[in-house]
Length: 108
Image (tube, rainbow, N blue to C red; front, top):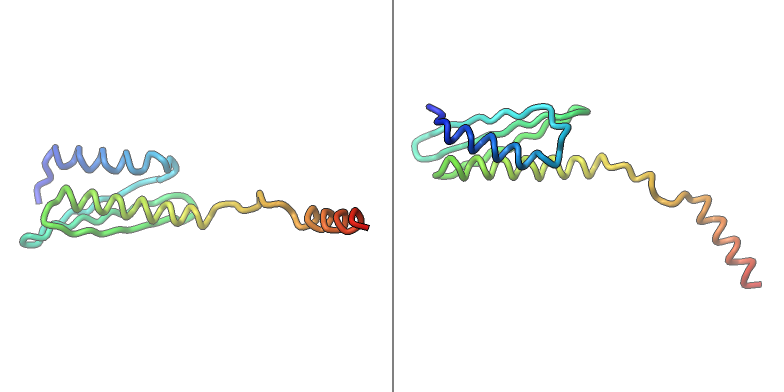
């Protein structure tokens, strides 16, 4: 398959725009294939802490396949980063216990 300059620019712009919110993405590989009338695009993105997400999309149009693969990859990255989110900002249990004992003594 011959990749035209327009297709290369579209893929680069689409990936750069989708991953702008994730500046720590180390690299992305886009694999394009045509089988009869099916145009497929597979995107593999890599990031820190062994983050590796893959998405594949097929459609009759190569531009639509690229867009779908990029969107799927961005969703997977978002889900993975949500799993890694630090939840230590919650209120410690010691504060809750202190409040409950204060509330018990204030009612007496």
